[in-house]
Each structure stands twice: as C-alpha cells, then as structure tokens.
Image (cartoon, rainbow, N blue to C red; front, side, top):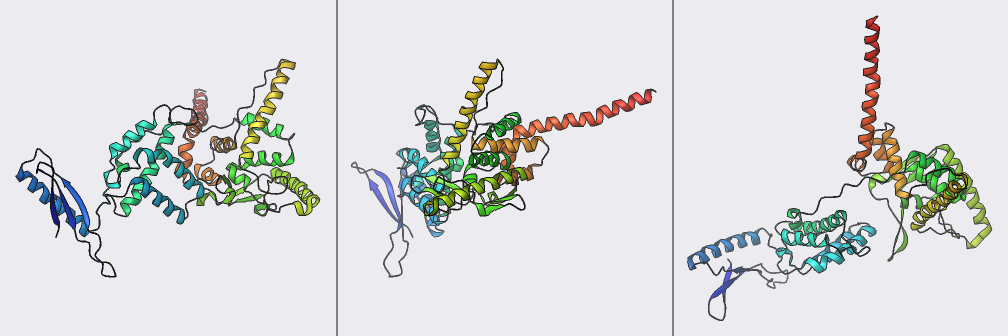
Amino acid sequence: MANIQERKNKYGKIISYSIRVHKGRDLNGKQLKPYAMTFKVDPTWSERKIQAELKKAVVLFEEQCKYGIVADNKQTFEKYAQYVLELKQRTGVKHRTIVRYRELLERINPAIGHFKLADLKPQHLNSFYEQLSKDGMNKSTGGKLSNKTIIEHHRLIRTILSQAEKEMLVQYNSASKATPPKMDKKEANYIETEDIERILEYAKSESLKWQVAINLLVFTGCRRGEIMGLKWNKIDFQNNLITIDTNLLYSTEKGIYQDTPKTEQSKRKINVPSSVIELIKTYKREQNLKRLQMGSAWFDTGFVFTQENGGPMHPDTLTDYCTKFTAKYNKKIEKQNKETGTKTPLLPHITPHAFRHSQASMLILNGLDCATVSKRLGHAKISTTTDIYSHIMQKADKSAATALENILLKKNANLIELDAF
C-alpha cells in the first residue's frame, strides 16, 4: 500500500505529492529505503482531475514496484556510465575499446552527464547530436565532427542505457528512440594494381625487414597490428602458412602490449606465396645472425619485426614507414621525370590499411566469392565485407555483364551469320 503525502507552496496550494512504497527488510531485519516518486500537479487541473490522475499514478507506481521496474530517479548518467565501463572491463572488453569509450565520454558527460537516468529523453540526445555537428567540436581541426564520430557517441550512449534497461533502472532506452545522423558513405581507399606492382619493385631496394613488411601487407591483407604482432612460431615454412592470433597495440596507459585480434573470426590461417616465404626465410637468417652478435643484449621476444635489441616495435612504426616510403620514391620519380622529360605518375599516399582494401578489391574484381574474401580478411560477418566493398562489387558486376554479353550475345550473332549461309 502506497503512502501519499501532499506538498504545498507558501500559499497553501498543493503543487505535488510524495508517493512511497514499502520495499521490505534486509537480511538483518533492517527496513530498506522505500521506493519513492514525486507526482507533480498541473496548476490548470481541477481537484477532481488531480485525484483521478494521482490515483492512476499510484496504481502504476505500485505495479512497477511489484515487478521491480522502478526507474532510479537519483543516479546520474555520468555516474552510471562509469559503472558500465568498469563492468565491461571486468567482463573482458578489449582495453583499446575501453580507452575509446573514455574519450567519447569526455564530450558526452559535460552535455548529458548531469541528467538522472530516468529523466534522459530522446530530445536531449538529439540536441546533443546537433551540437556535435557544429564547428569547434573537432579538437584537431576546429571544425565539425564527422557523422561517423557522432554515431560513435550515439552507440556508446545506447550501450550504457541498454545496460540500465537490463537492470530495470529505466523503462526504455532513450537512445533507441533518438535520431542520430546517417552514416557518411565513404568508399574504401585502395591502391591500383599498377601502383602495387611498382611498390613491390621499389621495395627490393629497402632493407630485408621492410621488404618482408611490404610483401606481407600486399599478399595477406592483414591489419597493421596483426603484421606487427606476428611471431616466428606462427609461420609454417613447410606449408606456406601464417597463423594470425595476436594483435600488437599501444596505449598511453599500457605502452606496447599484445592482445587477441579484433574478433574471433580474425583468428585465422592465411596462405602466403612461396616467393614471400623465401624472402621471410632470408630475413630470419639475418635476424638470427644479429641475435648471435648481440648476445645477452638481445631480448628474445619471438616477434618477426623488432627494434634493434629484439623488443617489439611500436605499431605506428609501420604507418610512419609507409609515409616515408611514398615520399622517398615520389621524390625519385619527380627527379627522373625532370631529367628525362617522362611523365611517370607519382605513387599514391599509402597506409597499411590501404593494402588491406587493395587485396579485397583485387580478389573481388577477379571473381573470388565474398565468403572467401571475408574469411581471408578476418571479418566478423560476410555483410561487413559486402558493406565496405559494395562499390567494388558493383564494378565486378559490370564486368560480369560484359562477360555474359561476350559469351552469349556474340555467340548468338555468330549463329545468325551461319544461318544466313
């Protein structure tokens, strides 16, 4: 049975009612703090209307208390968000993901962190998303945030409120009813086949370590962290296979650290051309010689790519190398063009991920099915592959139409010519 107390203003007019429902006692017999809510009175209501609405509110509140779905009117979003992040960390969510969540909360908390969970409405979130789309929100450029980044904020809010909904602290997830911006459709950046051929040729002038790195990027399509996390015991030299089950990452809190790949499907075995395996063998002999020369000063971490003392390399090193590689050979191309009067095109800006996109593009355009491409890349779902490379698949479909035309229509034309005789 609910306990109802009226609250009046200084003029003696009722402005609200305090409704309390007994929660019971704890194991020690101590009375628990009751469920409580405030029912506000609309000043335009008549006494009859007030009593009718109050009665409905009391019945609904008692029903919510009975089934344990009473909203926690006191806990703020900021406080609850911290609890959710700690919960996710305890249940094994990757460190890098937690770091990203904290970065997003730096914008989220000042905007909506003060709201009580039960008071947060879709319109509050829509206003926040609109604010994020204004100039000045991007700390790097001073401009606007991309729709992709705004959607990242939205997804985190939805995740936090989803947990609150599971724990029956709110009646519904406000973020699921909000309207974030649409995702910008951006085509994956890939390197043309002709440019990859030139890159492989130029790479022959680089040190063995970087020759191997470039060849693995080209022929495996692995992510940067997967390449830098590769260990010697994961290379099957006899069967030309490498096993991907480690991701090398960096954060300010942990420094360089090892983690599992992005998803379970990212743990995979990849076939590598025999020529690349032979190159890796030559590099392994070079590293073994260096290890013998350094003796006890060498840290045997087992990584394929190491610092001078054998320690793991910072994953950014590979990205930096790709940038320097482009600049170095574009400078040579420009010089050669000037001296000879030729017009050899410059290399495009290359990144480790661009090679990944390039492999997917080449395989799809050459007729390989999406299921095989998805498995080789380590995507969690085939739909991930089709979403990212939809524009490439469209090109492949045009090629298929042309092939069908050549096979069927031209063949049919030849038959008609024969009939004429």
